[in-house]
Image (tube, rainbow, N blue to C red; front, side, top):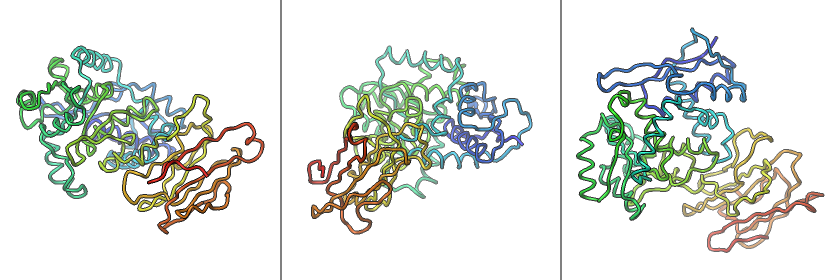
Amino acid sequence: MTLSYPAIAAGLTNQKIALIGLIYKALRENRPLVLPQFMAYHPNHGQHEACDFSRIYQIAPLEKVFEAFGVPYAPTATTPDRIDGWQCFWEGADRWGEVGRAGGAAWPSLAAQSIRFLRPTPLLHDLAETLYAKLCTLGIQHTLHLRLDRDWQGYSTEVLPTFAPQTEDYNLPFLDIVQKAKNTWGPEFKKAYVVCDEECLPTSKETIRDYTKTTLGIDLFWKSDFLPPSGLASNLISSMLDFEVALKTPFFAGNSRSTFSCFVAFEKFCRTGKPPHNQFIYNLSGPMLGLRQDTGPLMAPEDATDSLYAFAPLIPPRPHTIPWPFCLTAHIATLGDITTHPPQPQATRAYGPLCLDASSKAGRNIEGIQLDGPEYLPRLEYRTQDPTGQPTPWVPLGTFCGSRGQNLPLTGFAIRLKGPEALVTDCLYAARFAGEPATLI
């Protein structure tokens, strides 16, 4: 029996998340999936309309993903088993979160590759390109996602307070959001493209524009300034255009509690395989924007801006670096064990930098490490150094080295190759320790 779900009345990115869940469910249950319809809302007459997948996204690129991962797929089935779309959404949200915690090493995953090949139809792509070209003509390099709409007001009043800290700036007035951007981006920030649901703004865009220009000297532009109303009759199409433009502009700031804002960073990562740059959030408390460190899926601002999830190496990769599929587990005080690879690594996949940075929060020290890898890899040994300067014995792959729960942060570590590989291979590694220079032992 084939598998699909009825179109769900949700925003663009929530529908993408449900699609991820459907793909994983089809693979797990070995049931051919039928691509779902997407739901569009028409503000001019207040009605929802289901539209075929092929009207908004290309099917052929996704079919390549299904073939590569062995996802059962039924391109022509007409009577699929209709399941709850929100059930797929929650599964997709779980898979998306796993990708976020894995960092760059998760780029080859099914979730990341599905979004990488989720490409708008040529007509929508060309329309977005035309809109972006007009912004470039005006010298606009910054995009702001202003969550001011009435739906967000209700969500931030009734739902977010049940799990988000009250000190979090998830429901700021528009002037406060732009002020944070100005504080962060400096004098180069003079104009911004605004993405939002224009039909649901609490006040007109002209009022927002005038107040922002008069108070802060910043010019704001919306897509309706450049496109005719006939092209913006559907909120689905409007959101897709905003999204594609946000992907192209060099700087973006949004609300990390909004899946739209998170997906801008995530889709940049999926399309390029590289960590997204210059992605900011405004709901981090304080006068400045927060710089995202993750690849997009982490929604709590303290997680999204945590250097632990950046996986940024101290030593930049060299042109001839061999991406051996080792994985690193570190025991971090206050967090527990953190591992840097996807749950089921495959030897044929490229891997992200083998690194962890736990320094962004006080008291969060690395207390022990473990390296793992398949048997065919070069033989490695490693050891660590405790706060007294005493090194541990050398241990082989698969052995935990250090301590857990004893308040004994590492102050050094060393790695060495064994066997013939030691004669022809260089092993470069580095670390940074609180209050100490980089230490090799």
